[in-house]
Image (cartoon, rainbow, N blue to C red; front, side, top):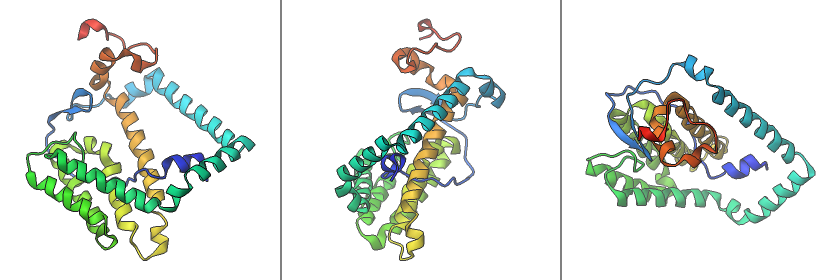
Amino acid sequence: MTMVWTLGRGAIFTGALLFASTSAQAHVKWFAPYIVGAPPQSLSIVLKDTWFWIGIALVVVFFVLTRLVEISPLGNRVHDALDRSTDVLWKRLDDYVRVTVGAFFVAIFSVGGVYLTPDLRTPAEWVSWLQLAIAACIFFRITMPLAGIGILALWLLAIRDYDLFHLFDYLALGAGVAAYLILEPSKNEKLRSHRFEALRWGLAIALMWSSLEKFAYPDWFYPLILEKPFLTFGLPRPSGLSDAST
């Protein structure tokens, strides 16, 4: 078992679903204001960004170093230690995922007025009750596929209000967990065996999309850099960005 697999066990799947969207609205993207419908920077500008290529180089370097550690004697000892420490969880991994997802949807129900995540507000009260029903369906294997279908339906419905680009941030939740819930109770063992593989791919694609977004829409995150400059790890701020701009 590799370190990557160990870290990605409980993570989430993707499978991009293209769907038409309506005009965008202004929303808060976790910590900074942004406009969903703002046009991204052109690809040529992104490719000319030195830090873009430095970031890719660093990822490759750390990936190679991690792989070298994995195949070394030290890596084998680390794998064994991780396997021993997570053995109890590993034997009940499906139960762990189901309980975690179910608890999440109960929490979302208690928040109220959101699609799948607090970032996606909606005035429709029935959405909250549907999410409570999804939580209930997760705890019975026979109804797990219904929960998966419900999550996909909410993800697609949210596209109507929030635009496809923004919803790609939540592919892992919208399509990934749904795929797991549909595959897990399957009697076809070949299909069922791909449920955790789907979760790991979903996590990887979701993180890559979030990273790409920082280069395509840097203006969204300037206020956050000004408020918390330590997030740059000492790297220079973008040209023209200063404390005075607040």
